[in-house]
Amino acid sequence: MSRADSVPPRRIYLIGPTGLPNFGDELLAATWLRYLARVAPEAEVWLDCHTPGTAQVMLAGLHPNLRCTNTLWRLSTEAAPSDDPWQVAAWVRKVLHDPGMAPRCHPGVELLGQMDVVHIIGGGYVNALWPQHVGLLAGTVAARERSGARLALTGQGFVPHAPGSEELLHALVAHFDVVDTRDEPSAALLASAGAEATCDDVFLDVPTPEQHDKARRFMVCVQSDMGALEPPALAGRVLGLLRGWEVKSSELTFVEAIPRVDRAVYDLIAAELPDAEFVPMSALWRRGIPAAADQVWISTCFHLHLLAAAAGARGVAVSVSPDYYDTKHGSLIRLGSGWSMIDAAGTDVPAVPETGGFSADTLDMLATMKGIVAEHVYGDR
Image 1 (tube, one colour):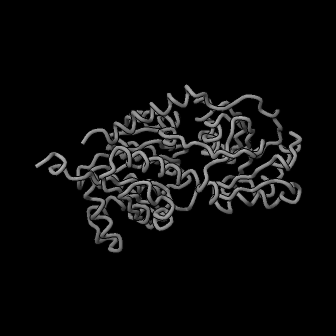
Image 2 (cartoon, rainbow, N blue to C red):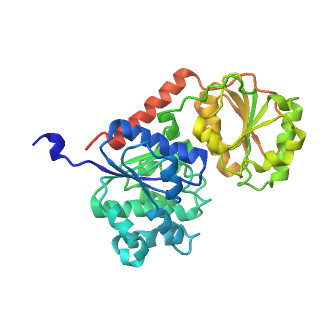
Image 3 (cartoon, rainbow, N blue to C red):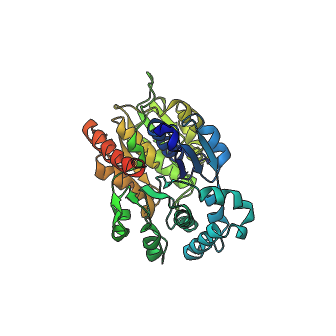
């Protein structure tokens, strides 16, 4: 019998906020699926996400053995009270050992208890904004107690953490074999549990931008789903920046990273910008980001900041939520994106950026750094 016949394929369980859709969240899942297609094409890969049907369609073909489910996401969001991370974590852990407590999730719980690797992929979704998502950590730890699976957290953003949850996070994260964050404040929060800061998971394999001969010079992506500002206030902020920079609508493109959410501001000011172009998320996902080195970006979206800067574009990151997005955008600026950051609620109009974008050497270094993390997760049988 050959070694290939004697060693069964690994069973890998990814967990992420996939399927909304949200360009960044889908991209994070796609990054790991492409990686696993290279290093473990024979593996059985499950993706546990909140919207598995959409995820299965959007990510189809990226790994030959991909299947999607929603077991841990459902357990985490159905736990009560959902705003108390301690109660959520305790209930989810109990369910993993007694699936009869949540009989509709029983098949998924049994499946999760048979995995070789359970990997919570990157993003900023286990924090004070969504305290119920600590159930993802708790369920993962309980899965290990059943199967002995290798546990990994990569590219995580835990800041700001839910009040009173610091010790709970420490206790849960201490069970993981790999604890990797995308920003230094998150690593500092969990340093005693072995957390180390590298970078966002997308740096593992930054996709090539869309080749577009007529890409416009100014690019805008502004969301309307977070922070205290309503769409009219955000529209005024964006219009003020464009007016201050004397941008012509014929050289302007709006990009949508979350369907409808990132269109609200554009719809309010489209009449003032009659020649502006709009690229929906569906086209962005199908064709890739239309980024180029000679562009100037205005973006509230973290992953468009990352991808545009990786293409050499300069830009301004607009923080719509200081306690959340300052850390996110700040992590890219500290790594060398060359962008500046302004408060969405402010009135300042900075000068048009003249320099910016990640250097090729920096991108190579970040890819190597994240590749080492990936090797720690998947390199050992």
